[in-house]
Length: 348
Image 1 (tube, rainbow, N blue to C red):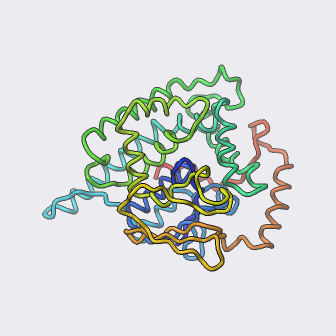
Image 2 (image 1 turned 90 degrees about the vertical axis):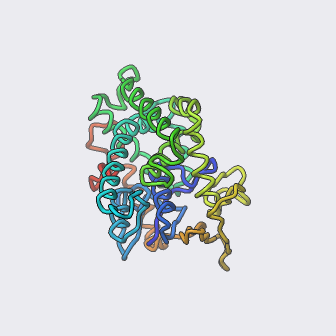
């Protein structure tokens, strides 16, 4: 199995909340999965990262990837059950975890997406961050996927389009729900190292995906970043998870050795129980990292098997055609994408 994700920045393993969430899930699980940090969203079935190649098939979206991993017996711990009643307590704990994740997603996700992809003050900054991680010419329109998703969220939940004048962008309820959710999470972390106790679970992977991006991404209008900085436990959670599980995968283009665009990643100097041994391939540019939990993370110029010269030429032609086609959606100059309808993946 091979996972394709966006490479990180600001010392994080990925710039994308869903990619970081999946990476945390894999680390917490101790999974033996190859991770490609130079994924191209145009190669993904839904035009977004992360996606996975397993058994010769491509699987896109966190939810569907996790379904496949669970079927293969890969997943973080879900229970702290006593030996005499393991089955019942495990089932109850799994139900609680699902409830926690649903609450976080319902209350934090809408404003999170609006801040990054809907707020006129922020969208250009976010788009630039993603464009730097996507090959030309796909970086011109792949980020538009996130704008379309955010537009669907605002239209369905509060009734305005991102094309509407800014005075109609009524996100007060979004913001209130998000802050309330963060306060609730901070209170939970006051009592324990991880959200449900002394071991990380899928809830912690979800929280790391959101909180790491909110804390580290500098935006002109980052209300939630300011809120997180007033909650020391949330900041400690992000820093502890990054240092413990992603000391080698964390990337910063300003401190990385060599050229930032050469595909290599430089880990932070923070100590970690997942200290890895690295070896450079004879072809150069590729480095594999194997952590203490036997999870294999590959960095470098790995390519999608479907990304040969002929396929790349074909994509360049297709991308030019797509960029010039008019859209029949009522989103103004938004580009239209064929989408498999996996918007509900985040609910898994």
